[in-house]
Amino acid sequence: MALDRDKIQEQIIEQIQTVYDPEIPVDIWQLGLIYEVTVKEDGIVFIRMTLTSPACPVAESLPLEVQEKAMSVEGVKDVDLRLVWDPPWNKEMMSEEARFALDMF
Image 1 (cartoon, one colour):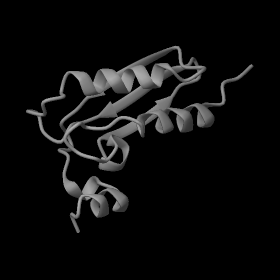
Image 2 (cartoon, one colour; image 1 turned 180 degrees about the horizontal axis):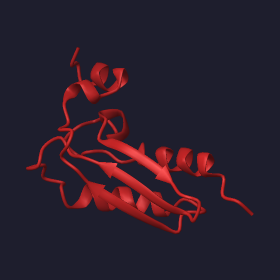
Image 3 (tube, rainbow, N blue to C red; image 1 turned 60 degrees about the horizontal axis):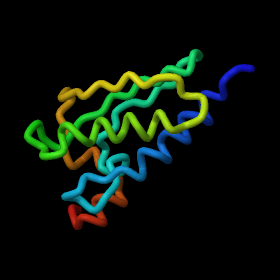
Image 4 (cartoon, rainbow, N blue to C red; image 1 turned 45 degrees about the vertical axis):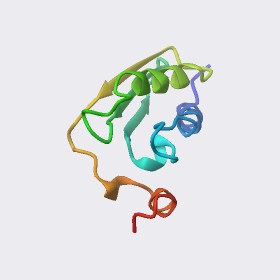
């Protein structure tokens, strides 16, 4: 039986939306910290993400939490998570909801 990669990707994004930077009351998906979520045929998931800054106090724990959330989705065999700094994150990457919630218009 073939994996429904779109459904798995959607469920991973739903899980990522439960992850918050403890200093910011907006989930990391809305903050624009997730650059890519790709589900491959073999159930391997590739995630590219960044942080608001390299000195972020949750630099070690946040990527692990994202990886754990993705691994919790049925059909996911493994997660290859890459923390990247290019392109650098900026507030323009936030969703409109996030900018509104943080009063950053």
